[in-house]
Length: 196
Image (spheres, helix red, strand yellow):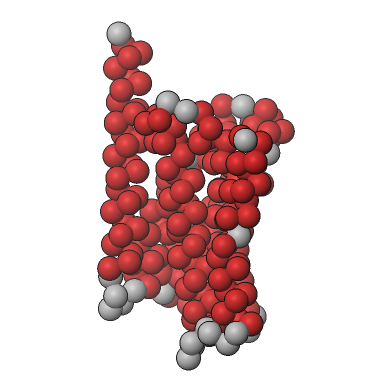
């Protein structure tokens, strides 16, 4: 049965595309379709970043290595949806008019930090293969710790973007804090074991 897990997770991970395709086809994107598309893929980017971060805690809690097998796929989906989110913003909102876009990146903090998060995701996506793991060796882990910075940037991007509605961004922030606390707990436990 385990052989079917990865394909199942892959097709489930396409759910954000299924949703937006259905809404586009049946004209259910609402009065502001561009904002709907941009925000939809932005939220799902954060969801996949948090799912990626949750794989290690789940492995520790359940004592099962199966969770780690999905981490790379979920991370690549995070980059995939982040790229769609960014391209939707550049293409649909600005229609590839770069001067005002660059001006916004430099002057609006939520745009700047969101764009920075996407840029940081690029080297992680490029170095996600087994070949790159072997090539980079210990540096691979150091590089991929950028996911923690990216997750913070992503949550801040969402909070700063939401000028009036803070409920959903705060949920992401709380989940991120919980995941960081798990990380600190496991790191502390490893240090104590090594000393003993």
